[in-house]
Length: 363
Ligand SMILES: C[S@@+](CC[C@H](N)C(=O)[O-])C[C@H]1O[C@@H](n2cnc3c(N)ncnc32)[C@H](O)[C@@H]1O
Image 1 (cartoon, rainbow, N blue to C red):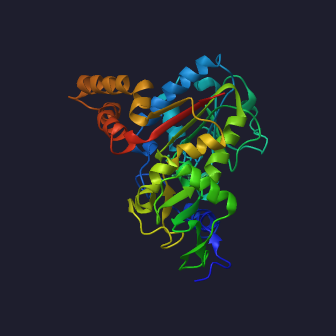
Image 2 (cartoon, rainbow, N blue to C red):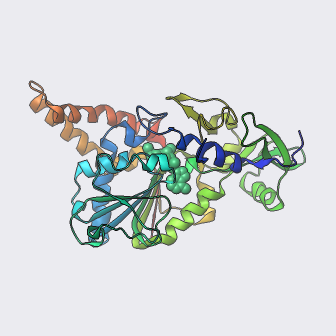
Image 3 (cartoon, rainbow, N blue to C red):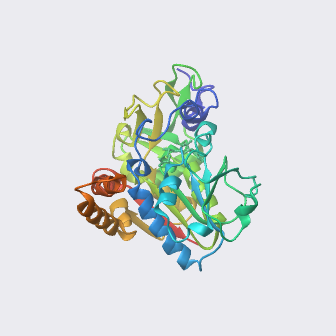
């Protein structure tokens, strides 16, 4: 098929994931046990409890700002905010948490079980007078896009793997671009086109040993998102990105079937072009591309190490103790405490969530 009129892979993904009428995230696709895939916040409340401890540390380092502005991008249904609020960190009176979520269907889920004050205006202000106050938190708001004001913490769990990316293929003659014919229709197909000059030069440097047939993702939007987030941080503020990650050169040596993952209904989905809108399409995040677009992170560690640094072992031990005290007449709190043991196993699994990267930048 001719490449004439074929769309970049990123344009296909934009429609398949985010089209207001047919996109996966606008038509009920979501994270959660009753959703399509389970993320760390959806494993249970322990992940949010660990982040709550980290937030207290960062709040102290910043000199206890009030209000304390935390922006969570790609917030999905709002589970992380809920679990942080339940963990009741010391910063709670100052906490102003913004759920930045582009999908209107996901934003509709935000008010449930949260001290929610509605949507922020584009400049980050709220019609709720308490939003700008010193205490009175926690308060939570939603936004369809990045608020136009500084933030103390910007956090994103499994957002960057969901940002549309382009795809390049190494051929015998150099680099080609994988484009999509019939994007927007029910049966799109791949076509190869000449790679734009800049992209081919970049690919030669990013994956110099790629053999013919190798593919690599070009994650411009993820890089731009990191650069914009760093530009938004208040002095001393932090950007924290949690995701499954690799490098461009490492992906060139592996099959794209491994690093482009699709999900639907708690199972792996089909090929990326199959059933547009009916499955999530995600990609391993290339840390070298983020570093090139912005700067290398100040800290890059796996999730198991980061969660332990944020107090995971203490929280599990506390759970074990509470369960032992109440095991003869367990209440809901005792059952939750006991479930910390199994949640910790899932969150630190070295071949699962524990291997995710946690990247931190400090302003
Ligand atoms: C894989 S889900 C992760 C949800 C949640 N963070 C979690 O860990 O369970 C990714 C979410 O990011 C949202 N999203 C995608 N692009 C976005 C953007 N540019 N700004 C804000 N949200 C975005 C999607 O609509 C989706 O809800």
